[in-house]
Amino acid sequence: DGDGVADEDDDFPNDPTRAYLSHFPVSGRQTIAYEDMWPVQGDYDFNDMVVSVKSTLIKDAAGEWLSAEYEIALDAFGGGIESGLALRLTDVNKANLNSNIISSVSGNASIDPNVSNGIIVFSDPDDVRSQYYNNTESGLMSPPDTVRFTINFASNNGASYLNDFYIFHRLERGREI
Image (tube, rainbow, N blue to C red; front, side, top):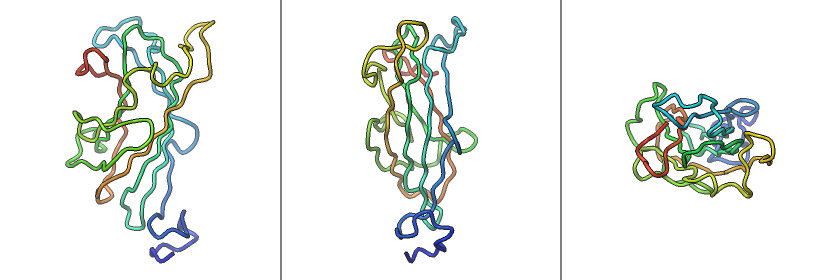
């Protein structure tokens, strides 16, 4: 395809704009569980929000990030506080990146205008649940709903980044956990 990557090493041998594909985690999903009472210990059951995440990352031949596709399943929601889910891209030390590397977001999420390199996955679990469930006790069970979105990257010089997922109190937006 003329991108300089040998076809046997090129995950997209017929596309000169894309070359490498990776998954995080490599197999399965990353599960994240939250206790929404922070900084108070609360009931410490970590079922206030439980999500599982899988992402697919695409780079070009020069090692520049092009896009990241996310699938986030809302596995359980048992919190008494109205909470949303967000994502911030950080450097490998969990510090802010030097510049905004996100050019756009498509799908079921949006850029957070108040957080550099931030994405609001959802502000309210009811916005993503097709039917009411909490999956934390018998009687209120359902297969989890999945949110899908794609981050398109601006020029980033192949900068490494980490996903920093957190929940936030919907009625007290600055309170992030």
